Length: 114
Length: 112
Figure (spheres, helix red, strand yellow):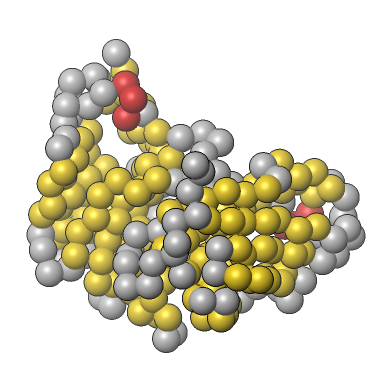
């Protein structure tokens, strides 16, 4: 029962264009959402987050959009740069079985082509 | 000045052996976690400790035993290793009340 899903295992984008990564969730108890970036042989690093009471959060080239009614969030990167090539994980936080937990999607591998 | 460190980075061992993975954080956080990333790349929570107290214990075989000697350390001991235990294990930490977790570099465990 995967509560957080990233349906695109990979995405290829031209340098300078917009990258859009998508994430869907099923549990309406999630109240905070995060995006992590992961390079090979390294741990995930926090990128940007959004509270469930907001619908948009922007940080430089990165913007996260949240559509609560559709249980969908997306990460926009513009303009995309070669250093953005990595695996991106969507994560949702909620109180599950008495404890605050982070539930991760399976990741999307983003490749930025020069 | 590594924030969350894990040792070893790679671990190759035979079925039936017992092994430990160590984790240390120097961020002053009070909550630490162990995650397992399986072959399908899902990152799943295994355990969480807050101030040395176990607060999350997912459905994990009891061959896995976490130990937190102090707030800055959370070790993972695995008994009687099985082929299915092969995975990358990540340690993470956070400050209570914060949603952001900081991850270590991971330990790739291979059981042969």
